[in-house]
Amino acid sequence: MTIGIIGFGTMGSGIAQAAAKAGCTVHAFDIDKKFLKTNYEKLKKEIHTSIEKGKLTSKLGEEILSRIHPKNSLKDLAECSIIIEAVVENIQAKGELFKELDLLTDKKTILASNTSSISITSIASHTKNPQRVIGLHFFNPAQIMKLVEVVKGFHTSEEIVNTSIEFAKSLGKTPVVCKDTPGFIVNRVARPFYGEALRLLGEGVATVEEIDRIVKLEGGFKMGPFELMDLIGIDVNLAVTQSVYEQYFHEPRYRPHIIQKKMVESNQLGRKTEKGFYEY
Ligand SMILES: NC(=O)c1ccc[n+]([C@@H]2O[C@H](COP(=O)([O-])OP(=O)(O)OC[C@H]3O[C@@H](n4cnc5c(N)ncnc54)[C@H](O)[C@@H]3O)[C@@H](O)[C@H]2O)c1
Image (tube, rainbow, N blue to C red; front, side):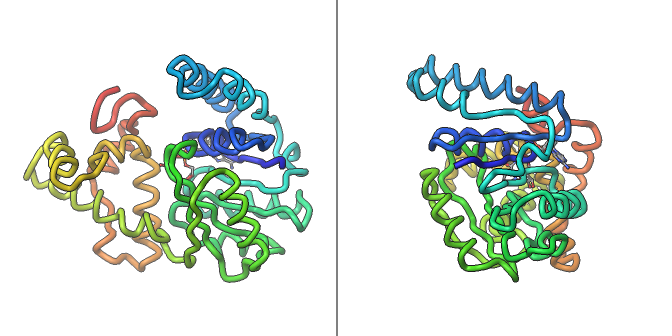
């Protein structure tokens, strides 16, 4: 099966790896050609490191790389069976993209969004064929994490839901079907995890390191909220919080924190800029 990935950032490159590992041919496009090239080189390096560490056989590692093809134009993805969008968390950007994809592809092509929070129904409203638009929400790092939320929009057909479930399973993932609600399941549950940690920090109750340590030690979490925000990207996390907050009509529980905004303004985006709550 040939799949298309749009947006070759943190998530796009992880989903590409997961699909290529399962035997899919992957055509990847990013609006920023320089970024596409840099991230493809980064992915190559990651695969070679995994081979050196014995996490991947060199045969499988080379096969994964040979199946991922960076592409120059969106048109190069027209023949893919499933196209997964992983661009910026912004309804306007996603809407415009889906409008273009709808015109470019056959009606049988599944158009999936990896959005963390945006309404699939509203993304689909930019197309003439909303029955083939679905949410396939992978988690970070997508090449490792098992869960995939399969989000059924108002018009998504049962056939597309079932094919998407089978696709996720073929990647070795655990799909969970959920309703099209802001933040779906995981990002809804996770909002207070980040929000309360930021409030504690803002009030000077405890430091970043203390909060992360306590949550891991006493809560049994693998990562603390600040470590996780650095992994996700402070910009992405802020965009998701804003999106959930707005979609719930400014419900105070979901209000973003000024600390996040300041960090985005000063380009402290976490691991991807080598500085967030921690230095990398
Ligand atoms: N980071 C996470 O932990 C995480 C987890 C699950 C889901 N998501 C979701 O996945 C999506 C992508 O997040 P990310 O963290 O990979 O972001 P990212 O910033 O790492 O990458 C986004 C990429 O999309 C590209 N892009 C932007 N507009 C585009 C367009 N119109 N066409 C083609 N490419 C375009 C950018 O150049 C960039 O390379 C978002 O919707 C986000 O909410 C993120």
